[in-house]
Image (cartoon, rainbow, N blue to C red; front, side):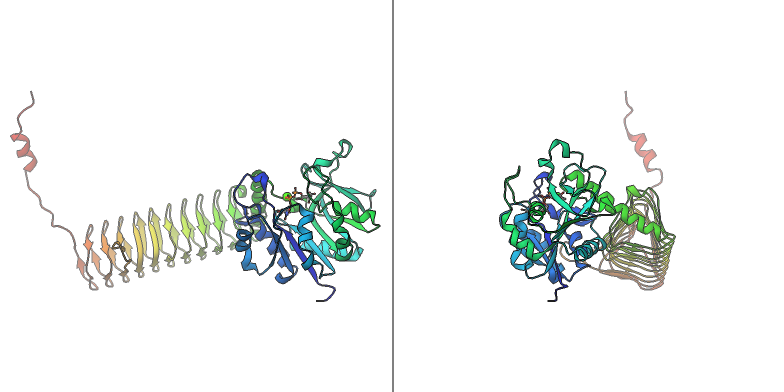
Length: 466
Ligand code: UD1
Ligand code: CA
């Protein structure tokens, strides 16, 4: 380990009492991911995962399991006796590094650039403690930073509840992100006391302790005050989410995507959208979704983990999950494209059509009221209104194969396993239970019977009403 090595501690052991929730605070989701996952992601962009120590305590195993895939280390703070105590618990790991940063697991908007800025400023200043501060519109609830005049030097941090009346107008807040020089830090940390309204060991008291020792404590201000916002209450979490969604929408708009009324759209961080595509109000684009160029995604559609080509038109009210849609396809309104569907180039899937593990070939059309599950449908096929693949026998799922250029008449049921050969024609309302050879006509329905005059005779036989 070189002396340039930095560790990052992320405090994530708290319960989150103010959320009034059974779920641990750092696992509450904003921007489609747990708070803690965002903080780890930013930290891991600055130092390798093995230099990251997540301090867990409340529901430790649940928190660990949720982010274990990131490869970070965990430190247990079995009893949560404050932020200062959290760092005491990690002393064994952190003291091996000459310097380390501390981040809060409940402040997810922090960017890697800012973490780097704190580190660089801390090293350049050769400070014992460096505090990231901000000037938010409303500082209520945050600890306030007392500077020595207008210098970079800090005298102390005062928690909201301990503010004296004349301090209540202090606008510069403690973000909860710090850098420390390990030596002075750990030779003073045991001097923290719990004589405060929460009877906790406050990490923030380190500022005053170090200053009293003649150590250098400095502040660096965040350029964007929103970046340090924390989520202590549900209302704060919801506004963090809105903030994150807006950041993403702005990023896509800068890349040539039109998003009308972006404040109504929910777009996850990893989503990609090509230029000249348009997203209408009230659309959700989630997970690992990618959308090509020149697409139009109309209102009320929810698209998760989908791969959508270019020139695709998703009409209003569609749900698309874990599926792919090729160039020029038209989906909806109100289509349900379930996992494993592959909609071919220029295909149309229309209103009230549900697909599941269905491959629909180029230019094929299923425009109205159908269920197509476990189906392989070729190119240029017409699926009539109301067609149903009967894929399930109560125990197993079976496949329906419909080859190129088949015409399936409306209201047909195809009882799988079954195959309809190329170019065949199925009469409307047929129930198809055995394979149909290519180029043939299949009729699976009762022959129509007409009894002329039947109603008239019946009417004449009935006794007349009084
Ligand atoms: C803290 C700061 C406050 C600052 C604010 C910024 C203290 C005393 N106050 O207040 O000055 O303005 O952050 O958001 O530090 N945690 C543990 N173990 C514990 C207690 C907390 O790991 O024993 C974790 C929490 O899970 C959370 C983080 O530390 O992720 C911060 O704790 P929280 O209780 O939210 O502190 P704030 O009241 O927000
Ligand atoms: Ca907090």
